[in-house]
Amino acid sequence: MPIAAGVAPVIAVADRGKATRGSLTTLVDTSKSWPVDIWRGCALNLFLGSILATHRIASNTADTLTFEAANVPIVAGVAYFIVGSVSIQAADVVIAAQVAGVYLQPEWATKEGQDKNFYFHKDDATTGIWATGSYRAPVGKTLYITSIQAGSRARFPADRDLPQHLTGYVYTSDFNVHFGGNGGAVLNFTNPLRVDAEVLVVFYVYNQSNHECAISLTAQGYEI
Image (cartoon, rainbow, N blue to C red; front, side, top):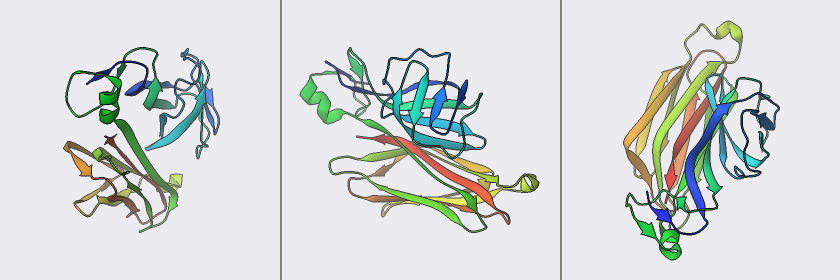
């Protein structure tokens, strides 16, 4: 990956761990000693049962992350990882166009990449009901989707021994990817799905069980 001279954002899967405690808007990990606000603006990914939830970090102290409200309180043992942009007071590593080299700031600016994480969910989906969302890459940028994960879990404990069927698809005017499974589905792409600037990409996941489920869809990739 290229190295840019000067101080600039760096794109990374940056840190991970398990919560010591938390709330609807905070996660505390007392094993950490982070610089204040180093994770501001990054994506916090939380493993909540069978669901991977993603939230934007608003601020952090040495051991506490503050983020947009979660659906359930964070408790001890919840696993998490952080991805996104952080600032480092040194040379920065950035994702760019698969070319290694050293760039001056103007050259680096045209090659900067950004990790993208999308998360859509519905906690009370009855049979045939869906969670959905969409995204349009801005002018001058191209989105590459490298993986898609979906999950389904019975909302009520009495139904959790039953199949948790789901189906879904991700599409643009250029491609249409379908998936399905019992409890979940994972697609990893050796050749990422390409979404050009101003092209709309749409995400759907459906509950196909005969009982109420919490369903979710996560897509990950990068934009350059």
